[in-house]
Amino acid sequence: MTDLPGTLAAVPDEIEVEAVDTRPLDELLDDLYHGQERISQVDIYRRAVAAELPAQLLARLNALPQGEYAVDEVTDLLGGSVG
Image 1 (spheres, one colour):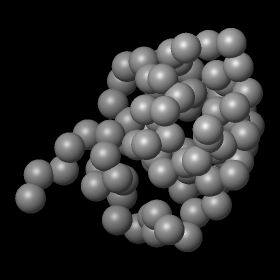
Image 2 (cartoon, helix red, strand yellow; image 1 turned 45 degrees about the horizontal axis):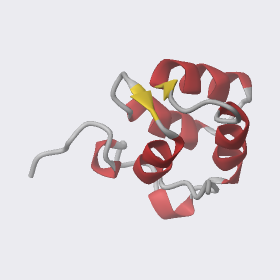
Image 3 (cartoon, helix red, strand yellow; image 1 turned 30 degrees about the horizontal axis):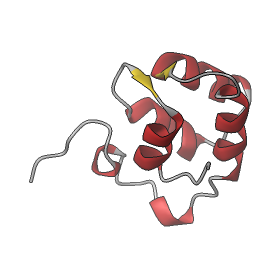
Image 4 (cartoon, one colour; image 1 turned 180 degrees about the vertical axis):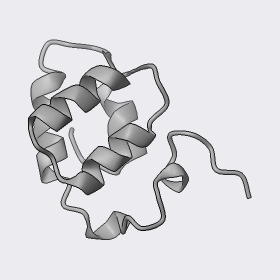
């Protein structure tokens, strides 16, 4: 089996995907994407660290490949529900 970068399979095994509360991530993404179409993984991660998101969510963001993402791409990859 191949783990593709940026998929839930790329998230470390010790993180229980279903058990993580994604509301702080959803709120952060709402703020970040207000008036923005695409944001880099680095900028998203920096803001998440500054917002003191839980370690499980930071690990998910860190697992994303470098690049720019639209909000729907990020939420699909991270399991969030921003809409």
